[in-house]
Amino acid sequence: MNIPSKILENAVYEISRLPGIGKSTALRLALHLIKSDSSEINDLINSVKALHENLKSCKNCHNLSDSEVCDICKSSLRDDSLICVVEDIRDIMAIENTGQFNGLYHVLNGKISPIEGVGPSQLTIQELINRINNNKIRELIFALSATMEGDTTSFYIYKKIGNDSIKFSSIARGVSVGDNLEYTDEITLGRSILKRVPYEQSTKE
Image (cartoon, rainbow, N blue to C red):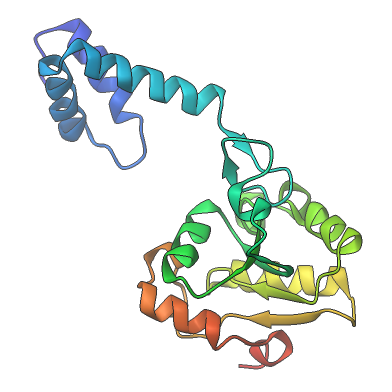
């Protein structure tokens, strides 16, 4: 790509480093920024800076939050005896959009994947176990992606907790095998939450 300005070229390079942004899209965005008002540019800079410096991880569930505890964990309207285990915050957004779940969440920040070098210690599994030990949890819902890695992670947690007083369940397989929750339509995902099945049963399917 032949860019006449070194300043513009550097901007295009930095923008193109963002996930899913190619050089052509980066150039289009950079040219748009050139035409933007100074106030718009400052707003963008300030919001990105705040994103990097002020955004926190909820100390309870590891969701993103403006404070130490996220709004979901703080809400008195949520069922704090019910925890839905997800891979990342995008899954929380997807489930919340269905309006079919009123419990709490726990974000693992990934899934066990030996091929990618991700083991249990790199996820928030121990933090989940601590939550269960320190709170009265009646049900744990596995809402991980329907992949081998997702199933492996669910099974590892199930065996690691080994608590007979807790009901383990898994979202119904209305979610296609191999799919990530963030790409599942809200109706299908909502039904899969409502029609969740005992985890022991899901492992036999």
